[in-house]
Image 1: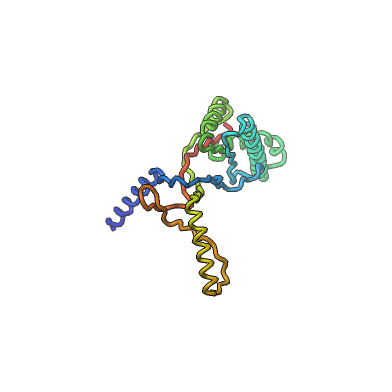
Image 2: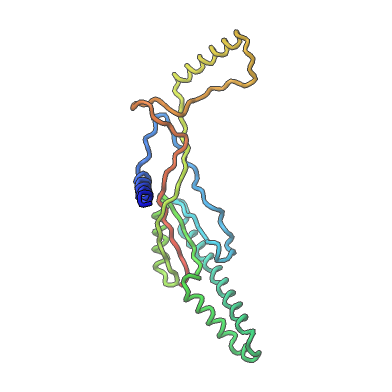
Length: 236
C-alpha cells in the first residue's frame, strides 16, 4: 500500500514537471493556427445567483464598456437581493397580527436586507477573465474598482488549456516527385487492368518527418497552457 502511494506521488510530481516544460520545436515547414478558447455559454443577466456572471475581456475590449457591463450586472443583482429580502420579510410576518405587520413591515425588510448584505457568501460576484495581453487590462479594471468604496474586489490566477492546429507546407520537389509517382502508378494500373472502385488520393504520412535532427514525431494539434487572471467584483 505504501509503495502505491509513493508511486502516485512520484507520478504527480513528474506530471507537474512535464506540464511546465516548453513545447517541442516544430519543423521549418510547419505553421500553427490558434483556435479560439472554449468557454461555456454566458447566462442571462437576469439569471439568479446560482449562475455565475462572467465577462471575457480581450485586448480590444473598451475600458469603460467593461466597467458599465459590471455595474449593470451588479445593479441587477442588488435588485434581486432586495426582492429576496422583501419576500423573506413577508414570510416572517405571516404569523403576526395585522396591526403589527403594518407597523414593522418596512423595518423588517430593512433588517433582512442588512443581514443579506452582511453575509459575504450571499453577495453575487461578477467575474472578469483575461488571458495574454488582456491581463494588463484586467489589472487596470481591478485598480479602478478598488478605488471605489462601494465595490469589493478579489484577484485570482489560474491556467486554461488551448488547442492549436499544425499545418505543414509541402516542398516543390516533394510535390513533383509525388506527381510523377502518381502518374506512373496510374499507368501501371491501366496496363494491368486492375479494377478499383475507390478513388486514388495522395496519402501524406504524418507519423514521422525528416528534420535536421533526424526523424522526429510530428503533431497535427498542439496543446498549450495559458495564464488567466480573474477579477471578482461585488457590492459591499
